[in-house]
Length: 288
Length: 331
Image (cartoon, each protein chain N blue to C red):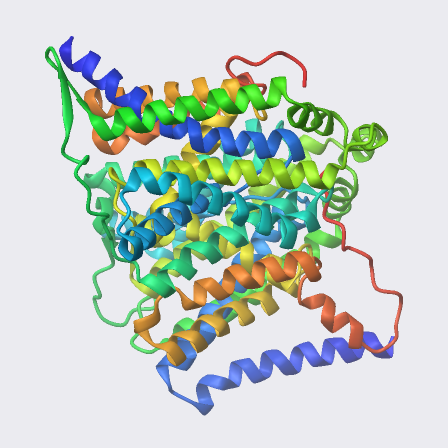
């Protein structure tokens, strides 16, 4: 029983990170209908920027959060303006291939510049843990989880309560009608994409104490993020958050009770079942 | 008519020239590189049946490749069955997998289909890693070399493999020619142009796509078996990874989606690029060739979505107007 609870705690903590990466992905899909195959690579970029700034400026990981996230926002905006904007409204094959090409480019560009080796950012939170009765909760994971949850809540508020969010929702419904209502769809798309990328970058900072920094780290999160997004219903921010937590728990439980190398298998099987049985997501409203 | 015979003569000359290469040089490295181009050309043509002609973007072809490769090796090393038979069993296994994947997947469209092919690819990779007793796990399986024997498809020189793979490529190409000219080929093009319109005209789109995937998987399985024989070794990291799936798709996309000659151009460019960067930058700068792949893929998508082969059509002598197959929309 104790192991079950400990597994669930571990699962929820990493699930928060999955949720953060997936929320960015689902926001981009929801607003402009593009599946970003490079989402995990933006997380990697966030980690590398954290690593570099830590080396140059000797700032701690958590202060850097407030530097790296805006940088990633700008990075996302730049990528949208140079690449993504050209495939808006085109066949989804082109959209997938473009972001796939970007993903390959970013991973291997990083390998070219910094080599494929594992780097780590010196920090003190890595070992720290709280003991809650018989359970152990690593501090870095709690911080990651809480910040991730806070960011998702803020995003929910932006989408549902602000003028900017209304513009995003209107553009998601129909870019043409949104234009008639005086909304600039390109601007809204750029904003949504930049926010989605910034969230991935933020996730990158938050996991820096927990994971090694290396060019292929995004691969760990890419497929999981797709699974979470489909699970939550594509384009559904709240769904992605719960999907992230659920996948984290499923993964942790199957790693504990079935076997470590099959942990991902359960995730993919659930993914395929959801895709076939409930294509609108586990918590999905029917119809799209 | 003259142009037609001109093209045909050119193809015959090209094949003759390729067949003559092993007589001119015995540089094993060069022969090996050209052979890999043949192999990936055939894989690209196979991918094109589903990815190009039917416009269903599969990023899971490593499934069929590794099933073909693993089946052949396991049959050979455990049961002493010649790879010549083994590769057909491998193809059959790949086709069964195609049925299992395709039947439910083709109800999905657009990004959903692509995502589910990735998921199936990952599932197979995890299983290959897990069942160590059967697949060798992460270490993979080795074909023990038992001396030259045509029966076991084992040869001392690369030239023998070179001819076998060249022959297979020609066979796959001819088969592709046959298919695209047939009724099923027409159906596929109709699906590519507009799936709903095709359906409303009585094309059973689900079944047609399934047949295309079966053909594609079967050829990929056979080529996978040949790949295993040539390399003499398989492991999940090389044949079963998403990188392999992407590489197969890349060959077709760079060369020309939905064309037969496109994948050959694509394979030559992609393989040439890899070898050139590897010899230029050496092992010190790993990732260079893949970075260029990524850039190439983006450039192709943004500037020449019909692939490099569309450049050739620009300089071709005047004949009947070139088919406009720029649009590969799946909607």
